[in-house]
Image (tube, rainbow, N blue to C red; front, side, top):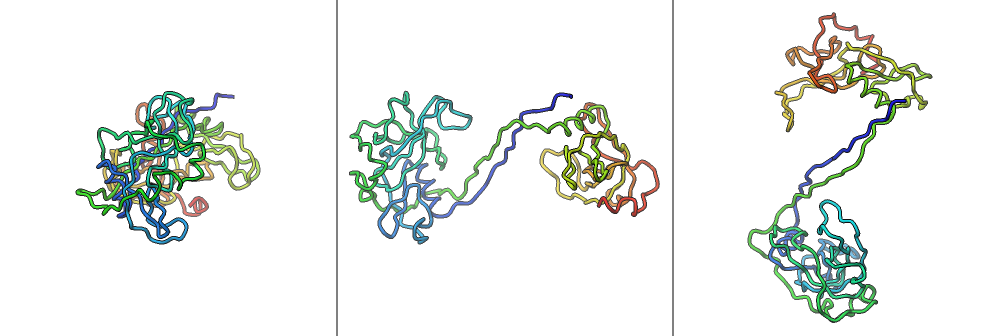
Length: 329
């Protein structure tokens, strides 16, 4: 059996969101080397701040400034930092209860080794040289030559000398406040199309289109999936289809996509290749967009080095009768 294909794949997009007054003050404060929390109705100070009390759901707006020093409440050692993490050398992930806060903040601790990290150790913020109003304005935490809070620091969070009473009220007002953030989302993984689609892709390299026939309902699925989506049984019989086909339905695209060198308007269609039991997607070219119609007979157009047809164009045959493709809409 031919080797199943696999390749690295990256899915990445920027996630843009606005921030409310509490998060705006927190992020802008980091830019100005100020750490803000929010005080609840019962006197607790939450860092990072939230807009609603997680216990009572009460709206929170009472901002307070806490110290850049704090206590490690728990930690885990990271032996191999990954892309995008705060430090490039091994470090500890820590929960730090800053002096004046009642909750802990997750961040990185720059320490020479796991034997130097302990619950209750005192740490302080190391600020980034260039700050923009993001959590990365805290480059990391670093050990601080202060008195340890002891091993019970993660339990008795309100008993340390730097408890909530040490927090000072803050207006939350800054010049040029942060109003929104862009958080890049990225997923790196190795993708394998599986046995059936590997055969399909290999056939495309020879400018052929191959599907698989269901042994039960006898439909030919293109691209093949390795199993019939209707009957649920495995498929293995390969069937070459096309190359010509019929437009079953279509849409006119009027918005130009980024990084796509195609002028609008253009037509994107479902095309039922001859012999296939399922329509696939394809762009229609070689004809004015307003002349594309259901039943139009088309053929693939390949470009040098392409892994799949660039588009489909009219092949000159009479339009297909509706009855021949109505089940493929």
